[in-house]
Length: 124
Image (tube, rainbow, N blue to C red; front, top):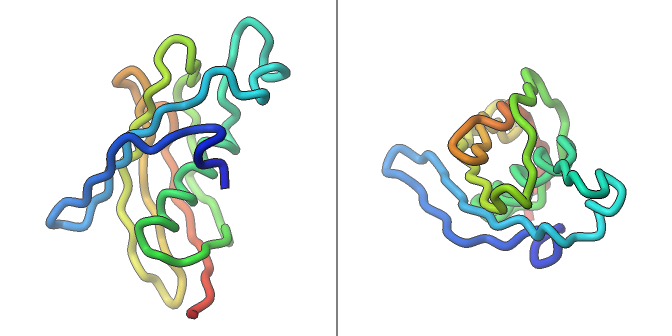
């Protein structure tokens, strides 16, 4: 997991309808930004996708693995020097033994990524 190294969870909420929101603070001095990119940090899209997975794991209490990602759209650059806060908004749904996730991540009020995924998990 990337928690406590790449980011910290500042707050999480779940609405009565089951929609989840997580407010994260990205570590702008993380070593990843030494190469991506020096003097102009850009959070890699795969890291943004991983943040959804990790938050969904905390929400559902299961270890997840990505089975399928569809309609992944990167809409804006996430530069933690401009603003280290990132807001994940997503819903989860059980679909044929898999966990479906549909969400967006917002950075500086704008949508940075739209993300739909299916995760597998093992029952404990």
